[in-house]
Length: 564
Image 1 (cartoon, one colour):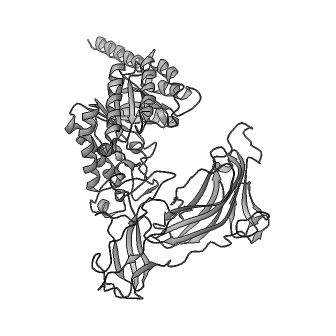
Image 2: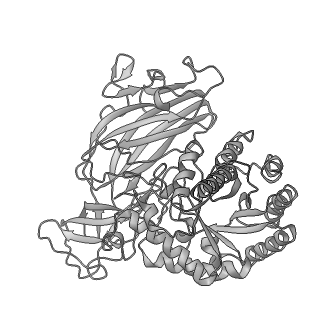
Image 3: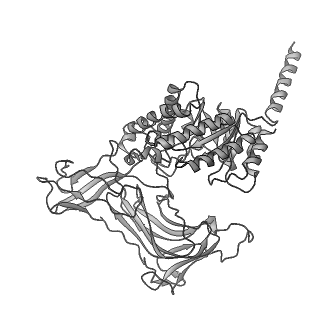
């Protein structure tokens, strides 16, 4: 009897091994599409993608179409969503709406920009005049040799240089005679002429250590000129804390050829009393870039946020008196609240009968929002109004799409944990993120009990972004996977670590989806994903994921994943 049982168990083990190593017929065969539905021509484009998908075995469309702001869409846009639903139903292509984003919070902020995640400023100085109090930098910050007129050998004095392609150009200057020139592609490429090479760890920059005051807001400035730069050349203005944390994330693309123009960005000094200011270039294979007249300057009330979790406090530096908004000064807000740093913050308007007098030195505590890289402004996960906005969208999504599946766009959450809304919860950032996803999941299930809910993997994956130290997060995301519902399907997208990620979630009992492709000129990426998915228990399928609207390979992708 024992021998027979052992034989049966051995057979079952062998069958299981074969089952999870042979090609799967994927249940989910999707294509990613992003649209604003702003015209009938755009609807026709998306319908064309759906037809191509259907003809080649794709059975789902992950649709990003501003579903966090369904209640703000025009009747015309809503009608286009309805028409797309009819087209896709006829073609047998299921629409999976994606939304409920925190890292990319544009949908929620289209209702209220003040719902952005905030960073704290403590004790910014304003000095009162007769009618207004104006910001004063305290202490002023100065970059030494900011115009590069002083030199040490072939380099600007006072700066260190990283990368062999940065040099002082004494013949070209913005306001003076000299500038720093980055010669991109003019050094020998050790990897061959056709390979991308940007020097040590891809960084080419000049740097200087600059004292700052902790928990203050600063603007970075530089004048830039280009000649035959590109492709995709980006300028970087960075502020790096003593422990190596980058406090400023900026990568605006540079025009191919341009005259002198100013670029600006901002950062919050957080816990740092000095930063390494860096300016440099990346992502270009050829060309020249000149930089001159760099600066760091403190700013006040730029991008100030006004919501319950981000209060403003105005106090007298000498007496400690805390003044009242509406009695001593008018409501404070930034009329240009856009999370860029090319504008000044507002003055504080003093009201008749104010207890603030001319000459009073005021210290202001407030919170400001910011932008990560080019266009990413995260929102706050602890402000109740965020969930009220999401709650309003679900009935509309159900009305126009009646989806069987939802996809939570909870990726790359890069600012958070600072404001009072987060702190008064006495939770870790991992718990706050997990609670956010759980509440999203439960809101959807309350409206559609049978709905399957998917989510991006990165913020719950220790092999990816679920880290102790991550961007501008005041706290740790380690352990986020312990706080999310077990019936989620996890959309993994880190190709280089796909096996680690898929295995991690599979062992925790989660089903997984592979997001492949990423705008290459071939399908090697999806083939790699398929090999890994075939070894993964609970893998539901794969998606054609393009961020650049490149659908030329969609037919071949569909054939690849459906004809197995």
